Image (cartoon, rainbow, N blue to C red; front, side, top):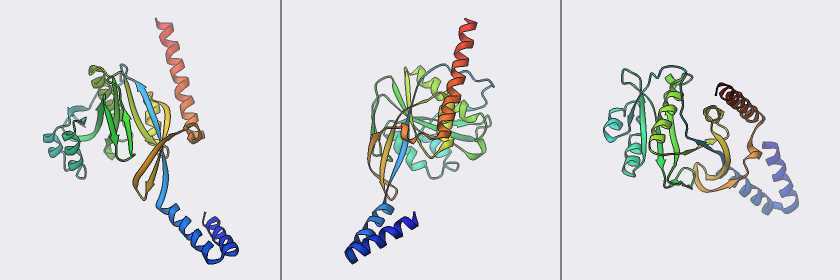
Length: 238
């Protein structure tokens, strides 16, 4: 990339002199200021989710009281959480049996929701939910806690009449999209977000297939084969 930039500057200088050099410098500055990030749009129908192991997590709806109580675990999120509660958003804290917090899930139900970090509005129908923020502390990663938390969130949404869930995952965050594929989510599109430094300034939907890597394709195929085998077992059983 550095060689390409240097060659570009030399070519402009040779053809157009200092005006060309200024144009080259301006272009390179814009390349560093602006960038395009891509996020996969996932969707999944809510369903009964049976765990192979006993549940060891406790859940509590996020409230002002437990947001303050758990502030030492999530110190930079207290103000954000209180703001979300004031805007009518919902979520769950997840804890060990001893009451120590492990993570949380946030979601929005059946309404238009503007996601500032993407500069995008999600238009949700009455029976739809958008899972927009999930987190598990490092000590719980690589365990069954994340699946248990999702199973609880999904069950709670089903009881509220939700039939379909949506979520977003950075195409470069393989841990995130692998987990979503593991849970049964499917890719339905891609959001291209233009950022000025780190701030989102615009967004649009683009064709997602161009961003599916060989690694992601293999993961999708693997989970598809598992689903086919599971369907076959159910057909034989019933």
